[in-house]
Structure formats: C-alpha cells, structure tokens
Image (tube, rainbow, N blue to C red; front, side, top):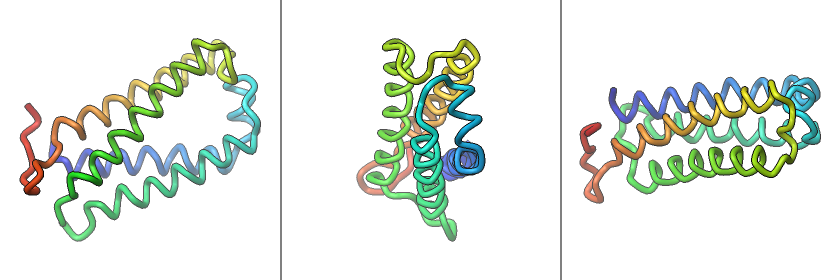
Amino acid sequence: MTLATVLRLNALSCLGFGVLFLAAPGPVATGLGTPPAWLIAALGAGLIGNAALLWLSVRGGRAPRRAEVLFFCMGDAAWVVATLALILAGVWIVTPGGRIAALAVAVMVGALGLAQWRRLPDSDGTARSAL
C-alpha cells in the first residue's frame, strides 16, 4: 500500500468520525461516558479539518512532504496516548462499551499512524518502502 493510499484512508476515517461527532455529539458522549457534548462536537470539527489536510497532502498525485507526514503521525500518536490516558485515569471514557470503542478506534488510528511512519519520505522527498 502506498503512502498516498494510507493518507487517504486516514482522511476517510477522520471524515467519518468527524461527521459522526458533529451530527450526534450527545449520543457519542453518552456512549463514551462523561465527556461534554461540546467537546465531542469540537473534536468532530477538528477531525473534519484534519481530513481535509490529509486529502490535500496528496492532491493531484503530488508526493506529500516529510513534514506533513510527520505532522499526521504525531497527531495519530497523540490520539492514541490521549485515549489511553483518559481510560487509565478514569476520565470521560468510563463506560465499558465506550472503553471498547475508544480502544478499537485507538488501535485503528495507531495502525494508520504506524503505516504512515513506515512510509515516511526521506528528507529529499523520496518515499521509503513499507519495510
């Protein structure tokens, strides 16, 4: 799978969850436990923005820049770390179903981030193979 494909999959994931979070922040918050609905809606807006950035990074068949890919990798890592921290601290993600769903999403986000990292372009713009 190419880096462009991974970035597009990440964009579609962000778009899907972003739309869900914006369309139904209350039910999503209730399913997770105790996060405020406004925070879920704000995350949704941020995810839609990130989806646009991901898609634009490979628009017109151009190769994404190393800094762009690192930005997306760091964002994915932050999502995974924040999810684990919230679950371990017993904050906001407190229902059994919410924990399972959040962990499943974190695994997917982590896998996309790792796939991006493994295909990170060299500083000269040359894409690495997936190892």
